[in-house]
Length: 585
Ligand SMILES: Nc1ncnc2c1ncn2[C@@H]1O[C@H](COP(=O)(O)OP(=O)(O)O)[C@@H](O)[C@H]1O
Ligand SMILES: [Mg+2]
Image: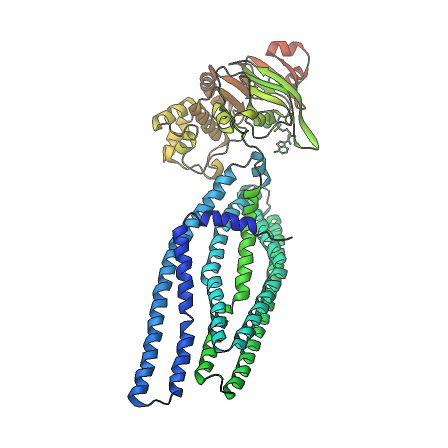
């Protein structure tokens, strides 16, 4: 396992460079203010050298006060500069974080159906946030730590060089060894840091899954089971956290050792040079002040490296998602789908979710313009899969699907999904108001149009009875509505969308007979002058259709009107007679 930081730096840089002037200003001010931090060491040399001059009385006071006012002046300038950098950073950083999270969000939503069924919503949410936070962390390290460390090391080497090249040489070698040792330890630790980040994601996935299914857990008395599951992953995280933090402790220890060695060596040499008359008393002050400043900067260098690696590790998860190619993309120069008549043709369509198990096999079917077709067949036959392929949530593995002669894989996904209206088997709603949920069908629709659609779908009745009416929020995924109510809201949404091709995937299955017969009229209205595919079990719905298509094991095994199919003694007849007089009550 290795951490490739290139892609992360690239993405971050692309976003940071949108603000070239501010970035330059911020980095410039930081460098200058850090250079100012080195001046006190020089001034303290001057301070002590003044003592050595043997001045007394007024002359001594004037000389010392002169140096002191320089010290204060430098301090004030440094203080002003660091205010500038803080204010700039406070403005710039959140802007870039927001940009990054928006990029990640936009990119994520373009991923395909399969991506979202393979990835936990909770983990994805966390990844997006971490992606932004990791930038914050990395930029903080750069602005508040790395720059000051770099300036302190280079500056101190230069200052030492002018006192004695030997000092400068020793500090150079020491700095190189120090950095190498730190990076070595951090790298060693990194692989465990990555494991810990993964465990962290795994734990939030487990949490999100359980919290999302909290009601199911209660229903099946699964609290203990879920707790054990959470404890198990948490336990692995805990062990890894302790281990990696201990490795961090090793690093701190190594560093402290380095500092003791440098301080001792420098002072040892200084004593000899002083005795030889090569350096002054003030130089002791210079060396001590410079080294203290340097050590202060380097004190948490190990933590800085760790935070940087951690930042990159956190970011990587999202960067991986950003780099993952989309499963489905529009063909280059794809045209918009144009629907004049609404003919649909499935030509020898084969499809499998996983290679090991074919779902559709050479399925062929032509649906005429404005024809109303019912798909029936046993559960798991592949009916919903056909619909997913028609919406191009997945790509067919063989064959083709076309609408009015245009292959759907060659038109834009947006135009296809604008012209096909789907009421799925399990309509999920946004945790927003009912008004907003219905309006999702056509977001520019007026309140009046929304209410008209909801009257047609017979949801106006129950919505009017709610205290907040259309402003009622429906709960996450729509849990505050009954299955039937949710389906009617979804139907209202489809009525509002009014696309020329309409697909209802067991859209009325959660309705009781009464509300079903109520909305039959609305559906009848809705289906007029549209090509319609209905997947249904209810005879009342099926018999209204122009044609019934029997799907079994991923292929069309029969098709015809109700009477024709009954005569043929096929699957339809069998299904029909099992339920004696209808598919469902
Ligand atoms: N996202 C998926 N990944 C893998 N297998 C799937 C997926 N969705 C459905 N299946 C499988 O494909 C088969 C057909 O499912 P589906 O088309 O939903 O049947 P139905 O005719 O009941 O609507 C089922 O066996 C189901 O388990
Ligand atoms: Mg289905």
